[in-house]
Length: 357
Image (spheres, rainbow, N blue to C red):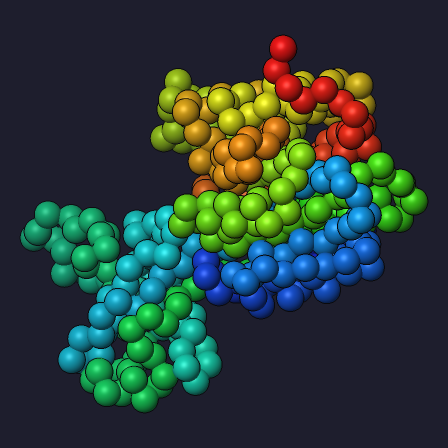
């Protein structure tokens, strides 16, 4: 699957830029710089959600949205002998932490550290320890708390993984935080295609990159009230359930390479979902179906339940190894999500019937 060189260059730079929840600004700068030529106006709210607008004067408003934040850790406690204990910022997985290199975003800049773990030789006569929030720790080479603080590291400092983007077997994109900066990439590509293909649309299109999804959909909740859209199409990732130790009876049957996943859920509006499915069928775009009980767990819920109810839908990208540093997505699926959102946007009309029968 081939992508524009400028698109891949943007994707690599964007993914390699740390964008932890609550501190998304550096990643947002990269994202805004890329979409600037493709939109008429760019706005940023008080907490860092960014959105580019095509036709900002239009009364009818359509949002296409992803979230910009990645999971991370906070410095929570520094011992007298210079070791650092952490708490989550989002759904960080403690089981993958041991032996990982980290970047501690201190007051004097980035400090490298490592999640330490006792050697296998020392664990032979005890029950195998399990990584928990209470027992994982970071070693930054200091021997005292005072030395740690001289490095500029204090309680509240952010900690991220430095793992960077690469392509694997010409089939997958691999990186930490594909959840969900790959979504930001995909909606940015929709804006690029609309501009470069000289497509006109009869409404305002708000290409929205929200903050703080990983801790409660907060960025989407705020920006939905600001924009007050008539329609919202959200893109996020979902699980590839074909890998070991995943129960399809619980998680559904979705896989990388089989196309975008269209969700069925109470917050998903029937008319918008059916428009997406009909677009996929008409344009011969492969797609998969999935169901979510009660809530989707994505920004779709925040948009759907805002402003008295906004017709919303969710197009997800299958992903392997969610919330690890080796998240994987199919390049073909990425291209198909971009195409599906693009073609759906072109079929939206302000006069379309949105109320249930």
